[in-house]
Image (tube, rainbow, N blue to C red; front, side, top):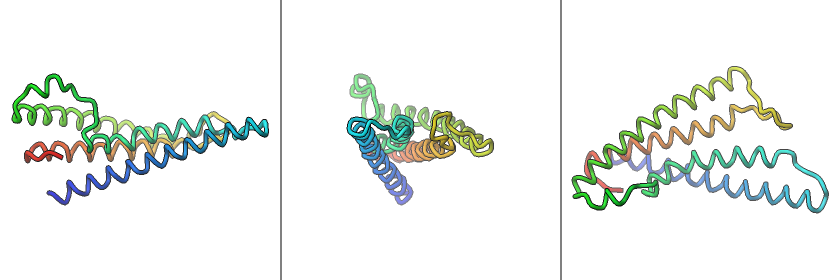
Length: 162
C-alpha cells in the first residue's frame, strides 16, 4: 500500500511541475505578445486563447499537488477544535466527498473529451485549435486529483498523515 501512496505522490508532484511549466509558458507567451504588439504593431492572434488553455491546465494539474501538500481550503476553526480522532473522521468524510465530486468531474470531462474527439470540435477563434487537446489536459489533471483523493482517504483510513 505504501508503494501505491508513493506513486500517487509522485504523480501529483509531476503534475505540479507540469503546471509550473505551463505558468512559465503562459508568462512567456504573454510577454512575447506584448513585445510583438509594442515594437512591431503585430499580434500572434493566439496569445489570449492559449493563455486561457494553459491557465485551465494549470488549475487542473496543480490540484492534486495542492491536495498532497495540504494546501486546499480547510475550515480550521472547526478542525482545530476536534480531537485527533475527530480530525481523522472529518478528513475521511471530506476526502470521500472530494472523491465523489472528483469522480463526477472525471466522468464529465471524459465525456467532453470523447465528444470533442468524436465530432472534431475546434475553437471558433483564428487558431481553430482542436479542443480535444485542452479538454484532455483537464481530464488528466482531474484524474490525477482523483488518484490524490484515493491516496488521501487511504492515508486517513490507516491513520497516517502526509
